[in-house]
Length: 196
Image (cartoon, rainbow, N blue to C red; front, side):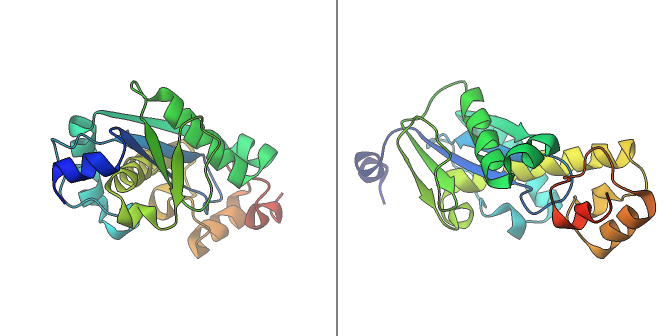
């Protein structure tokens, strides 16, 4: 599709929004919002889960350098416990959108529901693999959350957060059984509840 055709059929500034960490049992859920620059294309954008950690890190730096705007938002484990993971995900997405230094004309959000942002938009199931703006948001959110898990790994040694990134792996559950629940664990989640 030519540039003229694409700009005629879609709004000028589109922000992609995605989150990472819904299935984790520790730490925040982190969302990113990205407005790409059509004059500075980025090769290789796709769902962050399909990329190696090294490739994600490289792409994240390129996205930050080339995007018209990008921002990160988050909701803490305590907020997830208070309002549930779906609502906390929407909070993180709204916070990311609110931090954008320029506002888009339209948003495209990964998933099947919009997060209550006062901007026209659409939810796209599997959008992180289909739409460049959402892919870029997926990558920034994943890199930010993985970095956070590395920090928590140093703050709470023994849980191996840097390895499993907060997902309820056998190693993570074994550490929970041995060390108990850390202040960063999501207490409303079933795998954590049984150790309270």
